[in-house]
Image 1 (cartoon, rainbow, N blue to C red):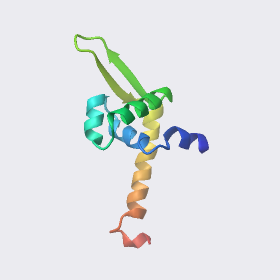
Image 2: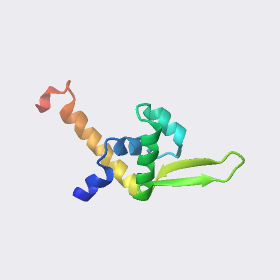
Image 3: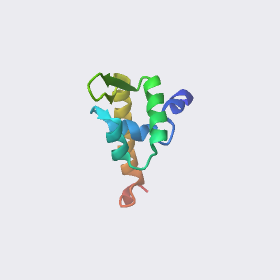
Length: 101
C-alpha cells in the first residue's frame, strides 16, 4: 500500500489520470480542463506518471510537433479503481445522502 500511495498519492495525479480518461489529450487540453494547476506542476506530474508507466507520451513529428498523453493499460486499470473511489465518495460523503450516516 505504501508503494501505491507513493505512485499516485499526490494531490494531482489522480485528477490528471481522471482528466485524461480514455482519450488522447494534449498538454494544453489537460491544463485547460484542470484549470487549477500550474503548468510547472502539471509538467512534473505528467513526467512522473510517464516514468511510472501509468501514462504514455507520444510525440508526432509534424510541421508543428505535437505530443499526446494517454493512459497505458496500467493507467486504465487505475482509472477503474479511481472511478470506484469516486462512487464510494458520492455514497458516503454526499451531504444530501443522510441514509449512510
